[in-house]
Length: 245
Image 1 (tube, rainbow, N blue to C red):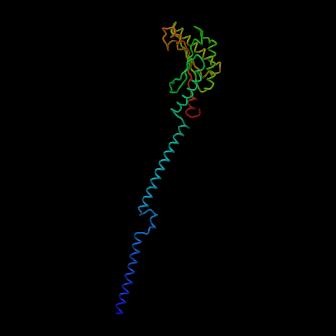
Image 2 (spheres, rainbow, N blue to C red):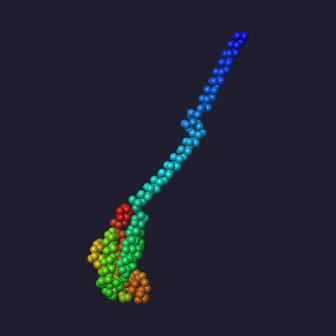
C-alpha cells in the first residue's frame, strides 16, 4: 500500500511540472507585450511605421516644391533674359513717354522697334518748328526741343533718329532736300544742347510716308512734320538682360 502511495505521489509531481513547462512555452511563443514597441510583428507597429513614412514623404515633396518655386523666382529676378529685358525696357520707355507728353504741342507714343523692344516716337508739327518753306528753327521749336533734351538726360543709354517729312507740294527733289535739311536742323540743335553726336542720326523722307490726305490743306499740314525716335542702345539692352538697370 505504501508502495502504491509513493508511485501516485511521484505521478502527481510529474504532471505539475509538465503544466508549468507548457505554460512557459506558450508565453514565449505568443509574447507578453514587450515586443510591440519594435513594430516588427505587431499590427499596431506596422501601422505606425507606414503612417510615419507617408508623412515624411509628403513633407519632402512639399519642401521640394517650395524650394523649386523660390529658386525659380530668384533666378527670374537676378538673371532676367529675353522677355524680362523687354519688360524692363518697356517700363522705362513708357514712363519717359508719359513725362514727354507734357512738352507742348507734340504727339508722343510708344512703338515696338525691329528688335522687339519698346521705343518712343515724338512727332513735332513742322508748323511749330519752321517757317513756311524754310528749315531754320523758330523760337517755339527751340523751346520744345530744349524741353525734349531735358527729358533725354535721364535716358543716356539710348539712341535717337530724326526723320523729316513734307507734303507733296512741289517736286520730289525739292521735298527731298527740304525734309533732309529740316531733320538735320533738329539733329544739330539736339547736339548743341548736349546730346552726344554718336547717338543721333537724321534722314529726309520727303513725302514718301504721309500720315494724312495730301489732297486737303489739313492733311498737308499734318504731313509736314519731324519725327524723333528714341530707342534702347546696345548698352541698355545688355544692362536690362543683366538686371542692372
